[in-house]
Length: 43
Image (cartoon, rainbow, N blue to C red):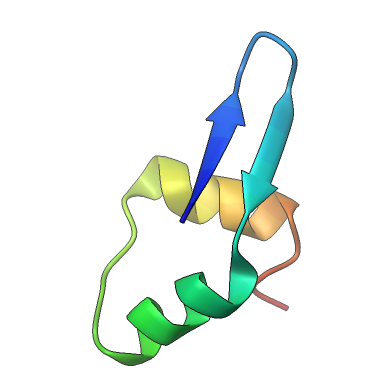
């Protein structure tokens, strides 16, 4: 549902898919949670 390139500090996220999986009960890891916060997926 996305990727993060730490060298280029670039990310590409499929936000609708991420929100779908979170609504179904998926639990992001700490690192993924931080990436989603930076991308303002969590407000």
